[in-house]
Amino acid sequence: MLWTQGIGGDLLSDEVLLDVKGLRVHFDTLTGPIEALHNIDLKVMKGEIRGVVGESGCGKSVTSLTAIGLATCEVDEGEILYDGYDTVYRRQDWEKWLIRLSTIISYIGALLIVFNVLRIIFDTSAVYDILQGAAMMLFGTFVGSIGNLSMYRHEKEMRRIRGNEISMIFQEPMTALNPLYTVEKQISEVMKEHNHLVDREISYVNRIIRALLTPSTTIISKTKENPISTLIPFAVLSLYFLVISKGASDSFESISWYSLPLIVLIGIFIDVRDNHSKNWNSNDTIKSLKAGLFILPNAFAFALILYMMFWMPIAAIMVILIGTFVTAITVMVLSDFLKLDSAHSRQVVQILEDVQIPNPRTVATMYPHELSGGMRQRVMIAMMMSCEPNLLIADEPTTALDVTIQAQILKLMREMRDRKGTSIMLITHDLGVIAEMCDTVSVMYAGTVVESGSLEDILMNPRMPYTIGLLHSIPRIIKESEGDRKDSLPIIPGQVPSPNEHFDGCRFHPRCPFADEICISTKPENVVIKSDHFAACHHVEKTKNVLDVESAFENLASKLMEVN
Image (cartoon, rainbow, N blue to C red; front, side, top):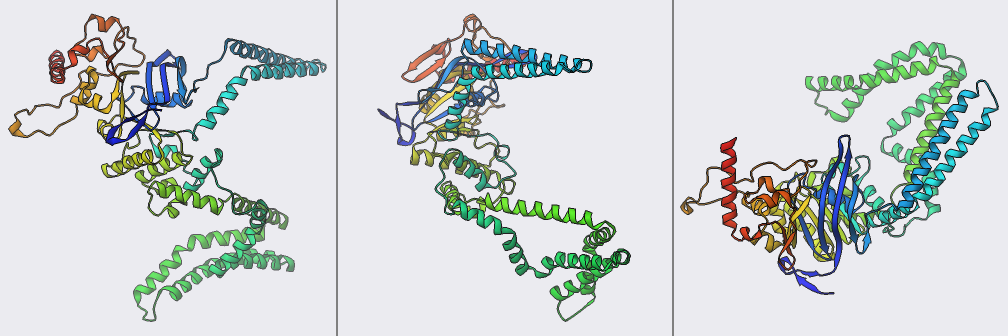
């Protein structure tokens, strides 16, 4: 294996980890197929940070999702090799034939069932024909499963790769994280799926015993913490059974409403006892009365429940009580049994510490909505790095973050690459992030890679007009003494074409100042500028002088403004 020097003096391998070759995909829509990617070529080397930059809708995210098998598009051509394994699944012709055959058999079986269900009204012997239809449907399902065997094997292998060897940080962490689970639960689930959790400290038998004892231990602990609140339900139940046993439920049915003012008075008494000093004044009286009024809704609910208990038959009350107790105990036992083992909790905390999350023990027990945007992004990175993947795909990892948090996230990703040798495919539209992070860069436009090379090649010697236009569009602060102030910001004139718009030639030609007949009629091939630097353009000889290209863009923009 050979090593080359990347940005910041980092040593990069010449061994390819992810290799996208000639990728073409389309999405099926009601108006017909829309081709989203056109002959994409892209490589990520081991230990490299590959930047993929382009405007929104250029196909960056579709490329990454297709690479890990999560895109909903159909692959028409090309292959995606991860460490030599093709992550794109293609059905063989005989498999397609079996799938079609199984569909036909299943439809015939379904029609037989429907027809014979109608026949059974007049002829009871049609029951056997219904069974024949069901058997035909089962046979069709069996035939289809044979046709899908290779797909099942491919999906099994992709599930092993995803999250384990290839991880992806999705664009919006709030939608990627499950709002119903704590941070430690979500991270541990990823690690459990790929067998990266350490051994449990508590054995299976001890977990069962601890879970079964949970209801009693919970009652004891709650009684110690707040004896009055815990004993009230037991006191009410004791009173209820005492009254029922004495046959005095009719009398207590009307008396139960007298508990309403009694509970309010108890609330006032507790507030006076706990919150006010001996130096009593009028303000204290008002505060205590307010405390009593605040518990009035609860007091009303309690009186209503008490009234209904004496009004309802005891059998109904027993069904409600038993159902409530069984449900509550089941939930408590299962919750304790499924609780994260202490060894796994420490493992999750260590992972959170690795991504420099402050107070990781507290964060591990929090839910996503309790975290800030930057913290959620760190949690996403921790989750994706928990299995120590070989390749991390970061799709706009700093979107909607302020510059301080953005800098911290980028620094964290670089440190992980330097420490663990993880390759990173960084998807962004921010050229500043590209300049800070990447070793190599691929520039995408309208579903194609228009230029690819080292960071220095792309920033210092761009040869594709679109790349030069992007760099020229970055606002710059210029001193008045330099005499180069402009009345308007530089732009790339025109709009990105719609994905369903067909082009015979270069997709950038409507916005390019050098476009001519060959650009309109013929797709440009990748022109080798130098080793590992390619530009898909017919006129690379006209882009040697960047200032000339920038002037050409400004002239084109002026002409279009005059026309409009």
